[in-house]
View (spheres, rainbow, N blue to C red):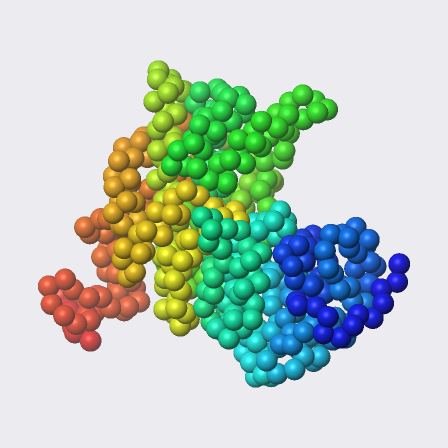
Length: 485
């Protein structure tokens, strides 16, 4: 088929980039009553989209970028759904050169938030609006209702927000979409969302590993356990799909599919970005960091092969006399580690909001993560309540509900972390989140010794607990006198 030049100003909104995510987002918009322009760098992909989905709703196919922009009703809204990085920059510049003052460019990809800050300024200097919008939910979410996290100006949200709110997931009648904040705020919270997702997935995998090793259970038996857990306070999308993955049997071999998948987890970069930014902000996100490192370790095949051949291990044999009690301990430890991982992610968002000048509604953010997104979970409602009760809450896990739950499950958490260590089962998220809990609640940390060491070799100075000021000990001088700086 040949795509004809569309009529001017015939579309409410447009999506450029007809990959899976772009196609599904365009279908979602059109199905919800918006005349949607569609286009792609290569025209045949647009043609295939129209051939396959053109009868579903009102689409306005465009053969070129010029036709695509001309087909949009002012103020124009053009959504970019292409690969992050240079391809997004290239499409953005093409759009900008064809747009008028007040038009809106939207990047719905997984872009690094600092790129979004740069792009927003570039567009603002040209009289355009640039919106970096995080979209979570995968290809099914894009089609049927994702969680959407748009940044940018409040003015751009007036034009874009009603459309995004309509196509987003809805929970209790409320859209899983809200204006997050200026410039890169939307892509920032999506980045942290993905970091939390890394920690959540890893600690679920650690729970599976402990159940399988400790009780010699089959994947199908463990799927039954996860199904039961999903009926309670661990209810979440990731727990739900974990049970489904564990139930999957390979048609060819009759074996559990999970046993045939190579045990090397890949990543697309958002977990790494979250950890890098947390280091810049000096925010400890230990659960997210260890989950990201665990993916790297799983993919280090040469190192793993050498270690497997060289280190046979000195670990204790499992001897669990009460399987039900062990299963319950794993469940409680999983809850504790998930609480810490979410708390660390929200703490990072809190610090970034101050650093970058964003006014982020944390209660609202937790609310829009209740549906559509990958980390949707029952206790996001409790996170919303915690921030509604105290909008200045500096540590999420110190909120009443979460503090009480951690106190309840702490003994099981310690038993499971110890069991993993004693029996040689790697549990980096269980252990790192527990260590963070102990650090954050300790009356005094050995960081005082580290400050003394730093002052000794680098004259980095220190403060004292008994009097104000900054001090340095003259370590090389006789008597090592102390002087106030």
